[in-house]
Length: 536
Image (cartoon, rainbow, N blue to C red; front, side):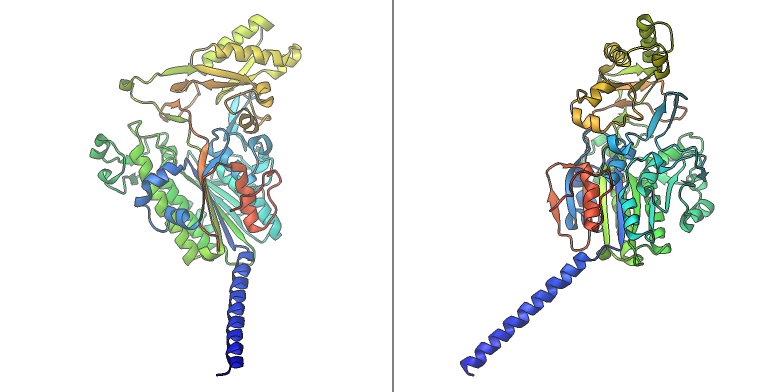
């Protein structure tokens, strides 16, 4: 063979190799440019990285392990200060803090009616399978779901399923097709007339398999033998837990919604949505948003619910495996789906430890605090009902009376905070002025942004750890709880086509989740999202 023939052959091989590499690169680039056909957003209340690491050997290959090994893992999503699941979900989906999106907690106090209402209360709507009147109108910013529907011009579907009402509505957004939740009184899957779609799967469940009868024979027992659960003390290994949801309990549906049984029911309904509604199989991108709970079980006989919590993690792992399998087998496939999972902080309210351990304990009576403060303010400013009420660590003054008497409202707030600080069980008190001017709490900037001025009280009261708030006018059988300081961080995961496994161990602002999701989808961020997307 001549030198010329050899040279020509080598050049030909090089050209072929370069061409193949170029085609492969273009194919991968094309796949990356193609928008996912389905987006699945998942919020998990109380999810922690510690338990994920502890229980990893007990997880399936297709649930949490899939997220940990194949997706982008953010170990510490920082919410600034502890938020309930509703407020945290609003941060996740709007990319904005309560200061901007208007949702600082699930329930808010109305000083005029002296009643506690859902933050999403809307008297202009009617409930379906419920007497609750709710809508997303109080959510003051657009969401990921809104932006996805707007970008597609409307044909794409957005559905949300959650145990609780406000969370379901936030997950559906303003432009969603439907949002369904479980009513606390009847156990039925419920929605609001704000949304126009009534998917067949949820109607079928209400009529053919109502929770009212299902729970009569349902019991929750552990998946594993207690001896196989890690880090359980000896006495917890001897007696496996067993929980039922009897009709005699006024809180049977709330207890059910605090258990992993509800997570399985959300998953079952989600898989029926994927198969029955053809999600992700049309030209427009569809979205399905789900909420799960991993909060400590509050309705057992003992305050120590570690065994129940570990079982909840393992059961949710299997639920995620079922959900991902449904996407693969009945939906567009995970190779055409973006899944993002975001945890929310643990609850600050826990069962009180047994008295034998000697942990300091006390009772803070909000009713007594309101009465004593009002008497004090009458001595300073004259007779009148100066205090309208107290709820969830916030005290509300009578603004109408303050205006009528031409009293300096700022001075009265200072007087009130100073008086409350001297009460037993109160570790500190700040005025709304302190919050706005960034002088309140251990993280003043975070406390400010996690406050919604439209619904906040005049004075913020910090109850001492281990103390119980009483006089909340509760009519349920829910056990008494004490307050505990908790971290305001939780993990998050992104699993999407052609995404490489990455772990981010540095703290990430929770407001960056929304722009990151919309960045992957190549659509605009929600209108209140001011932070950049994550890049890895």
